[in-house]
Image (tube, rainbow, N blue to C red; front, side, top):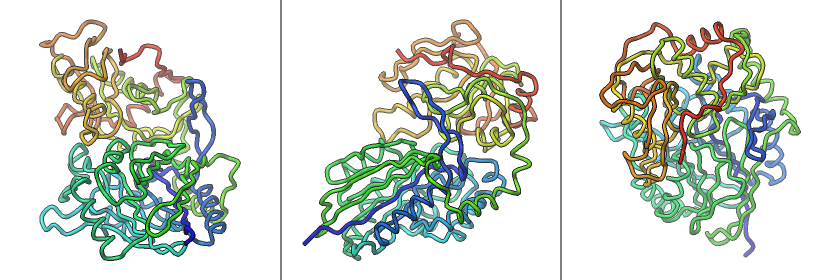
Length: 481
């Protein structure tokens, strides 16, 4: 019997970036900024593949889809829904940021989507009732394809309490084997695909320890995998972020076994035409917000991006704005991964809202030098924990006003070798004034004194006072040795 084929197209972590925007491509160790992305370009690629495969094609979204820009924040994700429906997505799994508007709003968005939302590990914390369909079965290319969804437990572990209020999110290693066994037993699928929003390090462990997975669609950690990873019998792909890439995986299957595959990580650059229908819907959805997002606030001499783990130009700007606002000794901000780059030139209000769409209140508080060191150690552990299942996502906490020398391969609690604050060695018992914004930066909702301004307002004020701004990496805030 000859192999039958199905093509799986993946998008992940688009963070509501529906239009073409600036993107970072690394060349010889330096960022190269080029225009890319746009869901209308994705639509063109998907339409072409559907025609070439005569429908033997599934288009899967791996989450972090409806959150990440001003229009998405102002509509609680609804602005993205008509575009997703026009794309003809087969199914999606909720990312951690799908929960950003709370479970009740997410239920509304799920009801509005034309495709099913699947996750086998999310349930009502009181009743145990599943919050989503655990899986679906689709026919494509003469094959029965089972798709099982799973999302990240960090929603109820490290993110603001409102995100996962009333929900239980089980360990993927606990939930997936049951869901996979049920799907194979009841539907006798030819191909088993896990649609995951857990993070690549964790997903590679899942692929090693959970039996029966043919394909694992990875997301959450914003990896651009030009070449799939193969773990045992499991093929793993992840396809960038911000709507700038699609992963196209053609799978051959014979008698329930994968016989081979080809893969392409497609960059949605300006050589790909915009699909007119989807482009029209994108423009209609964003039209009511153009005047607001287009307000020019100043200029940046530095390209702003969030592409590096220890610190980034985008977050240096943000924490510098907090220091400038408060006069504190130190400023903290959470190590988010989302946010399209801003190239040198004009900066708009829309740019600020995609730098920090949560727009938390800026507060100040008092912390000892020892408490600051402990906070840095906790952040380093969440990113570099030896056990991948204990890595909580995101980058290292963003800072201004301090410099730390760190050894990333040291064990938990022993990574910060040297800490300077306000230009001098940190004293363990000295009390420092710290500015921060958002529950994640405040470590579990620690209270502080409100400044009366939000993060976006702090940035607006900073541009008003200092434009054109600079936020380079010349004076490293973290040095890894």
